[in-house]
Image 1 (tube, rainbow, N blue to C red):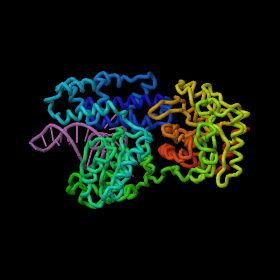
Image 2 (cartoon, helix red, strand yellow; image 1 turned 30 degrees about the vertical axis):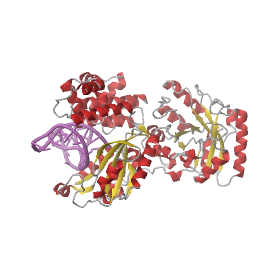
Image 3 (cartoon, rainbow, N blue to C red; image 1 turned 45 degrees about the horizontal axis):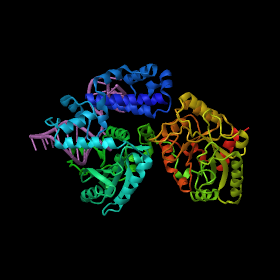
Image 4 (cartoon, rainbow, N blue to C red; image 1 turned 30 degrees about the horizontal axis):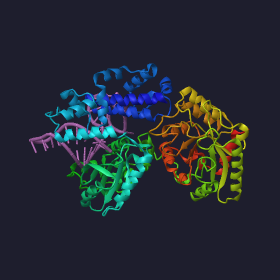
Length: 591
DNA sequence: GCCGTTTTCGGCCCGACTGTTTTCAGTCG
């Protein structure tokens, strides 16, 4: 839904411009919030404008509504254009520079006429920044470094790259003396598909150990340089260019700190507001009685000297706020707080709910393991069934199977299945959806299979109408049970097909065709927004690894992360169902 | 700009760290 994305970007852009202009902070925040709401919206904005539902969205007021309506109607916004004309465009990217915020950028603009990163770099080198009140030598040096870092790094990194970095540091952290417990927090714990920085949390029995831990952390192998190092907090940049923030807390405050450091920021704001409403205050040290907290004598980097109402575990804090425990993947201020207050949160899918994997490869095409080896790995994971779905003939590079080879492969799968105990193998294929939506095998061949995955692999730059028609045609085929990685996107790589999702969802739901959440990084396709939209439209999802090796089968967790962030439960997911129901699902579509 | 079992006006989460500062502003998460 490019319109949603464009408008979300517009609101973020406007917020940036207003920030630099020095507009009221809360106004800026309001615009950022609208931007975020639009990003998360699972239905098409054009529709919500036409049927008036946009006015009902909490957080979108009259002003934003007016901007949205104008943009949907005309593809432009006069408010945005006026705003853009009043601030040099080159200043906006400077907000991404570490250590540079709106106030400093405005100051540089006003005092030295700087309007871009290039001009700032020149001014730093020529010494032109000297003498500005409030900007000293260290600040100038920090700006110089910030500009250099930005030139090198690509910003957010994918979860597939960030998780190994975090795991390595976590291991070293846990090995330090006096570290009681260490955990991943932040957006990585919430399983966002990309990560701005890695957040780690360590607890100690005695707060006095904090400084030594922070210093040791700043010198871990793999750490390139430290940004800040204090007794309760340290930030470093790794050699791979990822920023890692560490927070150190006494054990009795671990829960509150984990909650605070896991975020999201918007979730935190919401529950802190809730605390306030009940005469309490919530911070990273704990949940406190507001009156007692205000009277207490507080010191920087030390827990307040009063007893917390809750602080040891996240569950304690939520309970004291009158809420059910909220899983990290749900903490995005997407309505989870209200539901937690009513104890009405959805049951999320978990690893143990999965009964099989319905999209896997073997040595028959481009996999590295035999049918038997894949089956053994699936048994080890506790699966009840496994679909073997090798590539079809167009995938020449992947050693795709000709119809003749496929039929032999099917016979081999059935033979292996007869011998195996403890698991059922389904004979399948991952058949290419050609550019016009035709499938890479004839129906007569597909009819021989137990389970058919159809996926787009090439021509992934088609425009929306053509791409949508292509996938719809595949869904229309009675033998197709699952659309694999429906868009073909790659995180940090390619955009993928710009599908008209409402139409895809409708067709998939009506025809009894499942849509995949491909768990392989960097695919994660469908993404969380589309997965949520799919279940809202009554579509059955399927979470598969697309494994090309036995190890690949255990890479399911990224896919589960996407699903959980999309509020997906086991009832929505085909491969959480018993085999008999999976067979019925497939049979129902056939004549 | 957004919102309302504290409010249609007046609030809007909270603390750590850094740098340039004699008591605080800016940035970050």
